[in-house]
Structures are given as C-alpha cells and as structure tokens.
Amino acid sequence: MAEPVELPPDYYLSNFRALVDFVLDCYEPLLTDEERQFYASFHTLDIDSQRLYVRLLSRKGVPSAAGAMFRASKLDYAEITGLPEAAEQLVDAGLLRRNPALPLAEILPLFNKAELQACSPTPLPKSLKRPALELALLEQSAASAELLDALLANESLLAVQAAEHFETFKLCFFGNLNQDLTDYVLRDLGLYRYESYPLDQQHLPFQSRTQIDQHLRYYDCLAQLDEALDAGTQAILALAEQLPMTAPNSEDTTLLRRLDRLRLTLARQLERLDELDAADQLYRRCTRPPARERRARIAIKRGDIDRGLALCRKILAAPHNEAEQVFAESFGYRTAKKEGCLDGWQQPARHQPPTETVTLPQAPERVELLAADYLQQASHGAEIARCYYVENCLFNGVLGLYIWDILFAPVPGAFFNPFQVAPSDFRTSDFYPARRAVFEQRLAELDSESLGKRVLRNFREKWGIANPLVAWEALTGDLLELALKHIPADHWRHLFRRLLSDIANHCSGLPDLILFTPDGGYELVEVKGPGDRLQQNQVRWLAFFARHQIPHRVLHVEWQQP
Image 1 (cartoon, helix red, strand yellow):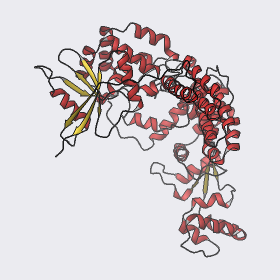
Image 2: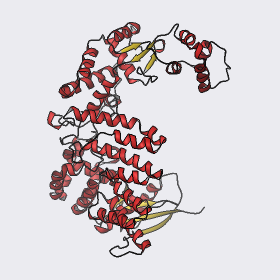
Image 3: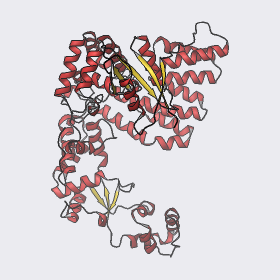
Image 4: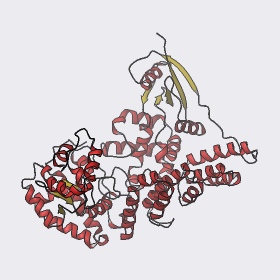
C-alpha cells in the first residue's frame, strides 16, 4: 500500500476544488444557474477566503433559519493569515451573511453559560441548567433587545450561505449525502488505493436534472424521518406522500432502492402503532423484501388466513432472495398447520450437520485458533494437516479476485467518482441482475486452471487496492494456492453462485476454519465455544454445503476442568 504522507494545512481546499471541478465538468448541463453561479463566485475569491468558506462549510455550526451560524471571534485557523478580511470578502460575495436578524432563541446557543449569565439584564441563579437558563432569558421578552445588544457588543455572527448548492455538488459526486471530503483524506493519507474505472458521460448515474431533484427530495424526506416516527400516524403518512414519485420500471435503481428502504421503515412503524391498513398499503408500494413478508404477517394477524397463505405461495413461486423463501416456507407451514389446512404445505427440512465435541485446555487465544491447532495435530496419517482460520475472508476474497474486472466494469450508474471501494449497487439486489450475462459466462467457463490463473494474477497485480470482497491482510499466497489446489472447481462455482445471488446477506456466516488434509481433500469447520450456538445465516450455509456435497462439520469446544 502507499506510504502515509503528511497533508498540507489546507488539504481540504484542494479536495473541495477537485470535487466541484469534477461535478462541473461532468454535470454542468444539469446544474441550475444558481449552482453554476455558486461555483463561479467561489473561484473568484482570494485563497484565504476560499479556505475560510470551506472550513465553515465543513463544520456543523449552530443551525438557524439563516444558515449554520458561527462567532467570528471563535474562528482561528493557522493557515488563514487574514481572517477578518477573508470573512469580509465572503460577505461581499454573498457566501457569508453577517449578523442576520434572527429570533433570540436561535442566537443563545452560540454563547456559553457564563456569557449568558453575564449579559442577562436580570441576575439569574448560577445553579440553573443550560435549558432552564435559556428559557429564563427568553421569558424576559421586554429585555430581549438589551440582552441581544450585550451579547453582540463585541461579537460578529456569521451565517454560511449557499450550502444547499454544495449539497447538490456532493450528491452528484458521491451519489449520496452521507459522505464528505473525508474520502479524499483517506486517499491522501495513503490509507486507501482505489481501482481505476472509466467515468464517461454515458455511464454516469445522473442523466437528467429531474433525477438530481428527486434524490435531493428523498434526502430532505430522510432528514424528517425521526421526527415523523416520533410524531405518529398522521406525520408518517404525510411524509410518505412527500416522497418523490417514480415508475416501478425506472432505470434509476438507486433511487428506487432508497425509496423502498424509507417506505419499509415508515410502514414498519405503522405496524407497531397497529395501523395495519395503512402499513399494508405502504408495503404494497415497495418492491423489495421484506415487504411481502410483512404483508403476509399483517394478513394473518387480521385473521385473513387465505390472503396470508396466498402471499406465502406467491413468494415461493418467485422469491426475491433466500431469506424471503425461508420465511415463506416456515411461516406458511406453521400457519397452515395451526389453521388445519396443510394441503400442499410441507414441513421445511432441517439439516443436521456432522458435529463433534472436543475438550481442550482453556487458553488466552481465540477458541477458533485453539480448534485449528487441535485439528492440525489430530491423526491424519503420518503427515500433519494444515488448518487456517479464515471465517468469511477466504471465499469472499477468492471471489473478489476472480471477478475483479466485472466488479469494476462501467455499468451505468455504478460509479459516481474515482474514489469508490465498490460499485454503488454492490450490496443490493440489483448487483447480480445488472451484470447477469457476464457473471454467467464467467461461471460457465470456470475450471481449476482458469480460476487459479486469474485469482493468482490479480492477487499479485492488484495487491493493496481496495475491493469490497478482499481482506488483503487475511489472504496469503500459501493459503490461496492450497485452496485453489484442494477445492474442486464445481465447489467454487456453487459457492460463488450463492455469494453473488445475495451479496449483502451471504458474505457472512461462513465457517471459521478450513482444514486441508494430506490426501488432497479439505473440510470446512464451524467452531462453537462453550455456550455458543449456530446463527441462522450459519445454519443456511451448512444446509447449502450438504446439498452440494461440500465437506463440513461443526466442532463444539468444551473446556477441560481444572
């Protein structure tokens, strides 16, 4: 990996410029006149003014109707030599607003308790907590002007302007409003190296201004979520109606996923409030799990057994993922059995994995490492077996190396900027369908020789570059070569197909250990220490291994009594 470096004091300014320059270059036709003017105004500023604006834009400040508020006297940045002049230029450019007329309630949070006590027209008990102190000051309505004059006698307040325009630039660059310029910092510090992938116009995620506005509206609704959930039914329904409208077959799958996620959250809260009709209606507008599961549960709760079972059958006819299928099999069977209508329903089979219990002396090391040592030393003929603690890293890592080029291929909407660890749809149900043809071709041509060549080549050439499936510190050349030699190509194909079918849920729950035996075989071993039990995702993996004759077992470890 790249060697860490010491960043210049105004590294943030370089990162900000790179971000807005990238967006203007890629999306200028989609930006509003105001957003383009924001870009132009910023670039006419002196460097100190640019530094100050980015500093303030990146800080939280005290929220107010005029924008994030700061006290000029509290600003101190070593790299900004002429701070008062820089602020004045920003005021002239309309990027800062000085001493905006605001209610006293929005100004008080800018000052500490001692300052508020000292400026209060009427002496107040020093024992008052902060909320009580502010309330007491606000109740002195007749003296509010006097208090305000005292607070601002030697102070200037600055409100950041045009932050909403930078939100648009951030959205276009990151594809979301959850990330910030920290991503650049990680790159500059040498903590991440990113794969190179094309960012040509035809593959960029935003192709129209309407798309941008719909995403901005979504994030505006998301900001209201917590308040709506606390406020109750009417607020939840009102927020649901504010969501941007999109067609179910829209090509903007990112927005569809986000809207589904928000609707599912709102509908689930309606369920908790026992507003079942409203919850059901909202679930109907969702296209992804667990919407159908929740609708089936609501139907059964309301006594509509036929509808609930029909929904389970609909899921089984075309499940969105394995978890949804498992739910329909289990919930449908239990419901049918309880209601005495088992015709067509069978009890889901439960796999009982091979299980062994061993007693080991307790030690400070992880139980998995103790188990690995035990398995290596156990009798395997004259030659000792080799056992590695791999958990989720081996199979995920080999898959990441095998499909490296597909993972970073220029699929429309997958990449927003040059600093992505993964395509934007990586952990979603859209990931595999969007690349189905190339994945199927790659899996069809998989054999031991082609797999080994591709994996080991990428291991050498790509080492250290960020990949969401590859944990570099957990992979070694020896481990990879043993795995590629001992595990049959058919097993790799089955494993890869299951992982790709539901990346978000199937990348975890894999066995802790892999045991390579001297006879050229291998075995996957899930280790359970005292009191530990199998998780559901682990149970599903073990059942999968049984269906495909992949050797596996569960090793329970008990401690020797002193």
